[in-house]
Image 1: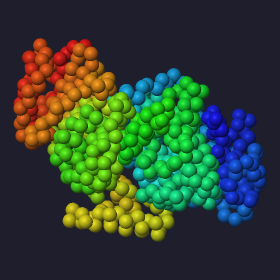
Image 2 (image 1 turned 90 degrees about the horizontal axis):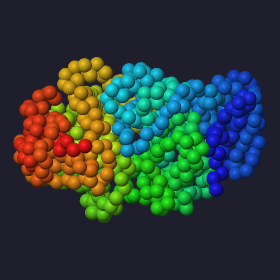
Image 3 (image 1 turned 30 degrees about the vertical axis):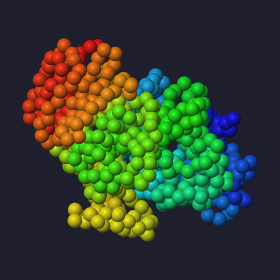
Image 4 (image 1 turned 45 degrees about the vertical axis):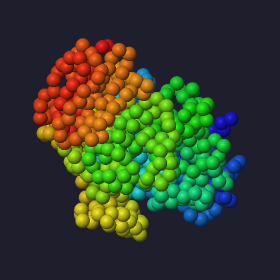
Amino acid sequence: MSTINTSKRTIGVSFDESGRAHVLLWAPDAKQVELLLSGQDKTVSLTRGESGYWSVETRALQPGDLYYFELDGKKQLPDPASLSQPDDVHGASQALDINRFRWTDENWRHFPLKNYIIYEMHIGTFTPEGTFAAAEKKLDYLVDLGITAVEIMPVAQFPGGRNWGYDGVFPFCVQHSYGGAQGLQSFVNASHAKGLAVVLDVVFNHVGPEGNHLQEFGPYFTEKYHTPWGNAINFDDAWCDGVRRFFVENALMWFRDFHIDALRMDAVHAIKDFSPTHILGEIRQEVDLLIQQTGRKHYLIVELDLNDTRFINPVNKAGYGMDAQWIDEFHHALRVTSGQEKTGYYSDFNAVESLAKSYQDAYVYDGAFSEHRKKYFGMKTENPGEQFVVFSQNHDHVGNRMLGERTSQLVSFEMLKLLAGAVLVSPYLPMLFMGEEYGEKNPFQYFVSHIDPELAEAVRKGRKKEFEAFYMDGEAPDPLAEDTFERSKLQWGLIDQEPHKTLLQFYKELIAIRKMQQPLCVLNRREVSVEHNTEARVIVLRRQHKLQDVICLMNFSKEEQSVDVPVYASHWCKLLGSSDLRWNGLQDIPALVPGELALALPPESITLYSNKHE
């Protein structure tokens, strides 16, 4: 039976309708807890309750006031569940009444996950201003592009003003430099008015290194496990109940108080939990209770480096109940097929063959031996297509390159069009990374703005050491330098210049075709068939729905290749040809082809034909 109140936020500071502050802090080892009102010379004592929780109801604390907690008469600390940190991660917390925001999205109806066409953005580099308010002004652009869901990289408060977001240390607090809580609420409200769903990236596998005060309040971390970023969050060790509640309430807050439509949970394979109910399963259960109460649908999407259907299977089938997962394997296979380097974990993937398998089976490794992992890896999946998110690039696979080069700097213009098509004709949920739709030239590099000089220098040295074998290609940019951040911002002026203008129109056309053609927008994996020719580097993807077929012909080679698709129709009608002159290609592909599809495919091209049955 749930002990969490899904209808309202209880952890931290909240205000009732009369303006009284309700304060709840988990500090199981403390003997005394005081609330200090910064600059007012006032203190309010909290009372210890069950399970290590301290609480008080008071009118001494008002919205806008700055405050600290003091444990056992010693160190003054910001609230671990702070909603606002106007003076950065080491400063006082600010009390907010987030229920004061005037929502106008009461008529918003969240659509099925299968209709998601996702656009991943980083608020700090999406616009020159780097704020929610500035991003709001670009929503019409996204609607015109055909996007249906905007995914925001993490916004939990981090040190300074420059960070990818994965170093956040206040999980409940929206980054102040982006516009804070009200800025995010306004952005979501405006997105809903435009018909856009909003996905928020959250990090439940670790907490950043600077300004991380959680361990001073209680056993938020455990020595039992470790992650690549330090000690694991304590989801199953002593005193884990308070930690679990903290993160469950965090998930509920984004949905209930910020009207977020879906959460993308970062690297859940790094969450260690051997409890009878995994923390993801508990989040699923509590979110389902919230959905019952509000009638609003919310989705849980995970980044997962495991081909394990337990994460995305429903709870009644012994799964954790996540709605969808990212599959990097599609990206890896697509990247290798496009001719990019086959190093590191990319070495596990065979051009064309691996991509064809991912189209058919989602997972490339579903029980086969992985040479990179040195073990048999993965399991077969029959889960529907809308449970998988695919992409040709994202923040990780761009930003974790030494120089942060986007795909537009690594392949030809013709290949850019082919990669776009390869993602958007897949039987999965497509995701674009900001700027890819017009071939942004600026890199997306790794940047931070740590305040602690020792930590800053450690990060700088670590980044250089990581890429020391690549110095023949230049030196890794300084992640602390403001220039590194500024270079990563989008250049919006490019959309009116060639070839960017044409590429943008190509993306719009592709997305419109995906939405209009039933074989493409109905994500039934049983009606997908794929053939490939490894030597010719050609893939023929067939998508079907009722009597209609869409044939997707992809030539990844640099030479013209002949194909003969033995599927008869009175005539095949061209939906799109990336090699056509209108897309700055080399030649027009026939608009109509009778009988079987027998064609000479131009190099690095994608061509779509339909038998026109509706």
